[in-house]
Amino acid sequence: MREAAFALLMVSMKDALQILHASSMRVSFTDDIPEGDVTNLITNMRNAICHVGSPLRHLDKNNNTLSLDTAIGAGCLMEIDGVELSNPYADDVAFFYGKHRVLLKRHCHRAFSEAYQRTKAKVNAEGWWWPFD
Image 1: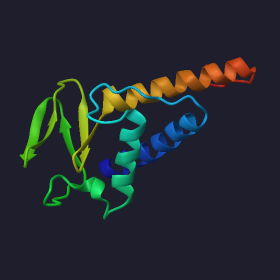
Image 2: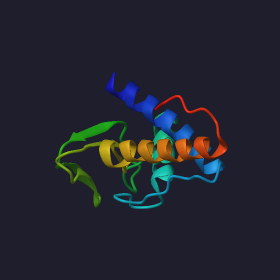
Image 3: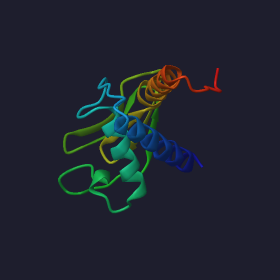
Image 4: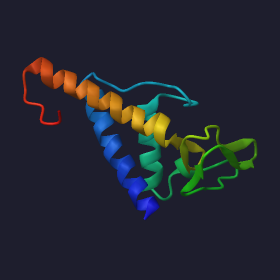
């Protein structure tokens, strides 16, 4: 159930973030993201989830793979060939596919909040009806 819910969240967020990117309203913060921005991170996570044979699931040079793993609160799940899967935050939940980590609060919630605000501002600027207030 947890994996299905997380997969649906990543698929939905990837679609929304790509629509914003195509509309020149990309969500692009980089906090706690080793390469790229949050739109890249969520796209990579979604692709790792949806494509079972994807190299995005690889952990190391030996192509060891990781489907879903979760760290609730601060801690290190494992370290393989210098790749550490850890959550540095006591108040967050980390999800891993391969070496990719998405933090529920710092990545998902923040990306959703920024996407919501950008979409709302665009709707208001265009004079369209916004039913979510």
